[in-house]
Length: 492
Image (cartoon, rainbow, N blue to C red; front, side, top):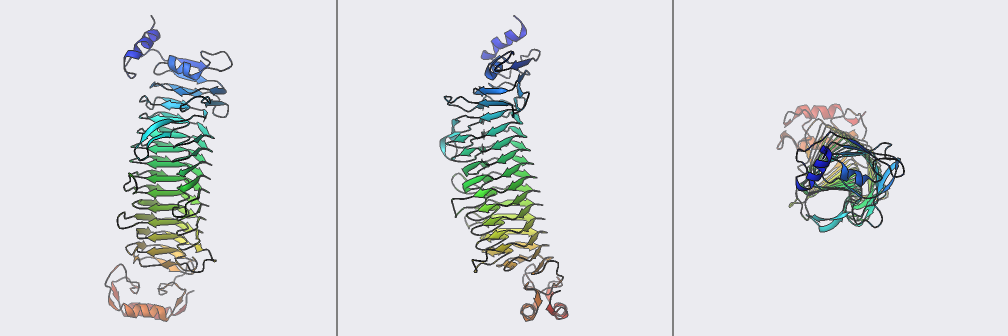
C-alpha cells in the first residue's frame, strides 16, 4: 500500500488535521477533456492536505464541500471562463466550508452561482436560511478572485454567509445578488472577524444591508472595497452594522447606493444601529473613505448612526448625498436609553442636501464631535422653505462640540442649535472670510454681534462656550469690543 492510499484509508477514522502527510500532488479537473477528474468534488474527495486542484475552463454544475481539507482549488483561466453552479435540485449552498477549514483551504478564480443556502440558528432571527453561494461556518478559508453573481435567496447572505469564522476574502466581486433579509452580498454574523480586501459590491439588494450586513459581536476589516449602486429597502444601502459590532473600514468607496421603502430609517451608504433586538453599542471606525451620490428616503443621505451606533470617521469625504428627511450627509440619532456619539476628524462634507433640515449634518439627542473639518456648500431643498441648519443642525445635542472647523457657504444658514464652540472655527456665509467679529455668521459685523459681546461681558461662565470671547482669554472685555468695532460693517 503506497503512502497516499494508506492516508486516505486512515482519514475517516482520524481527525482531519492529524499529521499524516504524503508528497503533495497536483490534480486536474476538466468537465469535457482529459484530466484526472471530470468533477471538482471528486478531486476534493481524493485530495490530501497540501494538494492543489487545477480546474480547466468550463461550467461545472455541482455543489462542492471542502471536507475540512487544507487544499487549494484553483480555476486556471479565472472566473470569466470557469464557473460553479449548484444544480437546480440541490438543496444546499454552491460552496460549503463547515469542517473547520483554515487559511490553507483556498478557493480561487471561480464564478459562483445558484445555491439555495442552508438553515442556521441565527441569534437574532432563530432558524433561518442563509448562504446561497458560499456557506462558511466555524471555518476560516481563503477565497480570492471569485465572482458571486446573480443569486437570489429567501433568507440572508445570498452571495455568502460568514458565521463564527474569520475567512480571508480578497479581490472578489459580488454583483447583482438579492436577499430577502440581511446582506444581499454577504451576511457576517455571530463573532466573525473576516478580512475583506479589494472587493467590489455592486447592484446587490436586501431589506437590511443591500451590500453587506454585519451583526452580533463581529469586528470585520473592510479595506479598499467599493460599494456601488446597492439598494436596501429598509436600512443601509451599502453596509449595515448592528449589535455590538465594531468593524474597521479603510480606504473604501461608497457610491450611488440607495435606501428606500422606509422613511423612518435611512443611511443609503452606511447604517449603524446599536440597540434593538439582540443589540448593544457598535463602534465602527472609518478612515479615508469617500461617500458620494447617495439617496436616502429617510435620514442620513450617506450615513445614519443611531441608538448607540457610535461612528468615528477620520479623513473621510461625504459629497453630493441627499436625504428626504434630516441629514443630507450624515444623521446622528440617539435617545436617553441609547446614547449615540459621532466623531468626525479632518472630514469634508460638501454639496449634500436635505429635503428637511441639516443639509450637511443633523444631530438629534446625540453628542457629535467635529474637529478640523470643512463643511461647505450643503443646503436644504428650497421648496421646503422652513428648514434650518444648512451646514449643521443640533437639536437636544448641546454637548456636541465644533473645533478648528470651517463652515461656510451653506444654505440657508451655517449652524443651528446649541452646541459647544471649541475654538478655532471659521464660520460665515463666505468661505475664506477673515472676519472673526462676525459672531453670528451672517457676513456682517453689526449690532447683533455687539449685543453678543455686551451680553457676555465679564468672565466666561463656560470657557468653551463663549462666542463673545474673540481673543480666547476666557474674558469678554474691552479687547473683544475693540475687535468688533474695528471690523464693523460687511465682511470682506
